[in-house]
Amino acid sequence: DTGVSQDPRHKITKRGQNVTFRCDPISEHNRLYWYRQTLGQGPEFLTYFQNEAQLEKSRLLSDRFSAERPKGSFSTLEIQRTEQGDSAMYLCASSLEVGTGQPQHFGDGTRLSIL
Amino acid sequence: GQNIDQPTEMTATEGAIVQINCTYQTSGFNGLFWYQQHAGEAPTFLSYNVLDGLEEKGRFSSFLSRSKGYSYLLLKELQMKDSASYLCAVRDTHDMRFGAGTRLTVKP
Image (cartoon, rainbow over all chains, first blue to last red; front, side, top):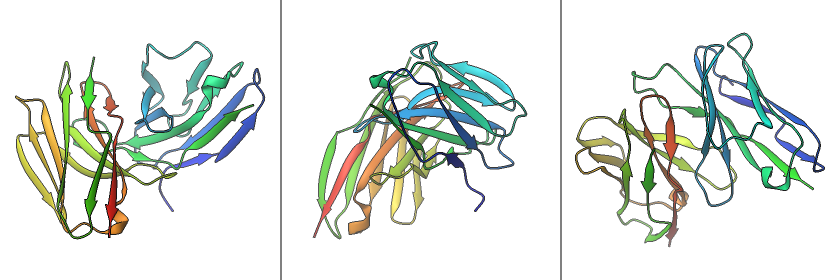
């Protein structure tokens, strides 16, 4: 399977703990996106990378959230001092560079539950 | 910023045709995508429009009018497996924004 993979699939943690998620994009894709999705809503943009550079971060994103893509391949999303409102599905997507009309391909997501 | 509006829910009958509308406002348009998302699964790509007009792909077609900020997804010969959420997404200069999705229920 050469699709986007995310790990873990599910994460349950107590409020105040730090969590880290990993995303492995499709290998030839240079763009990588992170989204958050809650029930009944569409994916909400968090941030994206072109290769290893983080080009945009949502203004709505708390400073508790940080993402990296150190070698331009896999990416990690860390949430520090988790809050109940952080409970959501975190989706990763990858694509070729914009301008070619290439769609984003999504992973199956990491479902985060904050107790 | 971007506002993307689509109906929350729709119901249709197996074998029928359904049209899901999407209106948007964006500061820099660089394409509109439709995705299908089954409950508990990741969104999957359906169609892409960047120029005005109709794009047809099997049972699914998508239309775009840039001047009106309007698109629709047309599903023909509905099947039970088409019950899902359909997400309209607009790409601007830098990133992509999704609507809240239209939950389609196909009934026998």
